[in-house]
Image (tube, rainbow, N blue to C red; front, side):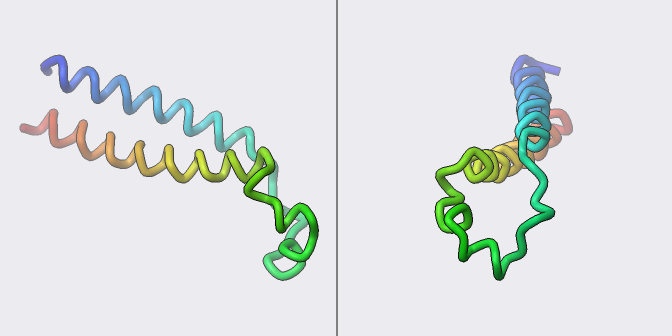
Length: 78
């Protein structure tokens, strides 16, 4: 394994740990439904709350994690 393989592997591990922490920081969504949750003040301003921000980070980190997994796999296989 070369330095690129090690860098990709370490980056994958770090992003995986950060993704896990971000998911664990989110609150559960048991009390809201799609119909009633959007009519409240919280529902209309959700993107500005901590849960909305963490939700966006979760999506971005999940995409980055998948790309890094594929890149690491192809880098090691070559």
